[in-house]
Length: 389
Image (cartoon, rainbow, N blue to C red; front, side, top):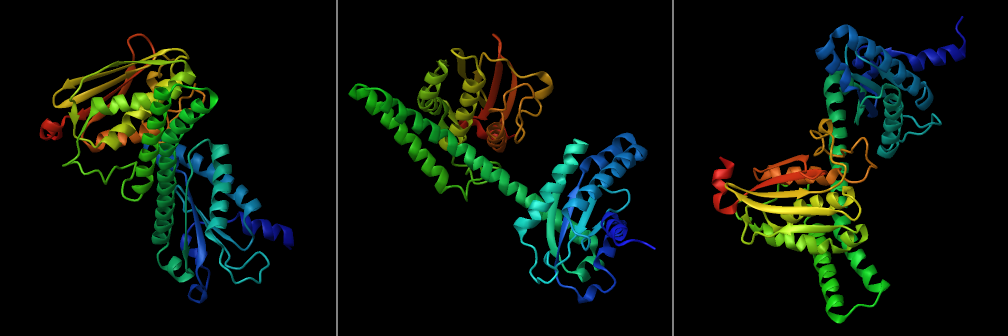
């Protein structure tokens, strides 16, 4: 005879192998219920890289951790599945409330909470990425096509991750002009300045406020990650003028860091990119150089004409970037393993995205006198056709 406790534990810990079985024996009578999905991509990657035997060992471990987390965070009436030889783990939740009497379907915020808590536990023990997704699906639809339901869940998860990344990018870009405005206003409040200096600081703060307003106005039509709304055919600006404006806007940050910028001017360097997008590129590079350069150090900025491109180089005198980390430095959220977590994150991903969209290139290497060198190639406006070819 099986006790109530052992029956509860067996119900919670059991994983169906066929996701269609989650719909139950009478799927046509049910209403929509939440379906949660976790994916460990390394399982499939390991199968291709090291063979099925190694991937099955990882799969069994991931399933054990999934069941352990589900036992504490889900209910006995929720049903679980993990198809054999797959990277996916599924929970089909009971539509009833915790009291067993509610007819209310769980809200998205509750589903995301359960997803992230279980994913966090699996990630902590596996030390591997865990992707998540969710959807609502009726038992009949799940029984008919479980693959479609899982695909819909993962697509929803991907869309939500993209939205979070986009909002993070917007927040990052707004932070730069806001910090500049705050820095100049604090400088004016902390000490008395002559009239010309006061006016110059206020003009820079006003220019940054206007740039921030343009960012807010264009947030829906100008994605900072894919730059899809840049009208490349008509876009043009003077890269030297943009660089001069950017350096002036960073004066307060340079003062706080005790750093200075050496700038080789090259007037009339027209590139096939609008001024706001070019400002994103230049400001992100300068900001990273200030943050990661030596305190009281020197940043060297140089422009050159290398048809069909204009070349921008920014050298700092910080610790530099290890060779094994350079390939991922332009990825979203990348951080140096030996750093303090500041910079080298979403800003450089934005730089790479803007540059790639216009047919340019971005790379990082060693500065001649130590530190990191960022080199950006942007197509010249007069030779844009040559750059694209």
